[in-house]
Length: 115
Image (cartoon, rainbow, N blue to C red; front, side, top):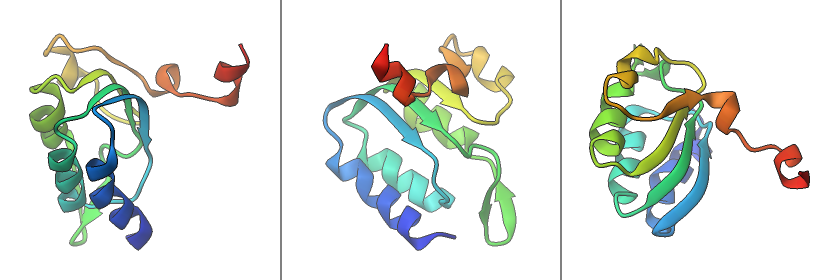
């Protein structure tokens, strides 16, 4: 586990503005860090949220799936307009009428700014 990623994620939710255009999370974190971030950022609306590690988060030597927490804290409360995962089973999210897109379709690169 990367201590810097963990510390960043736990504190990030406290400093986000009320509205954010784009947030890309590609960090090594455990479930507890994610829950802290989600609780601390409840007042923030994020236009595009990209999560790089949805399936294989290792905690206590076992793999954890954060899908439940994403649904509970983000999708039910409609805090994100577009949600993308680097790797996941999109079928779990399509049933909720939410806009789940391919990770690469929402990603920002230098090319996006040059257009």
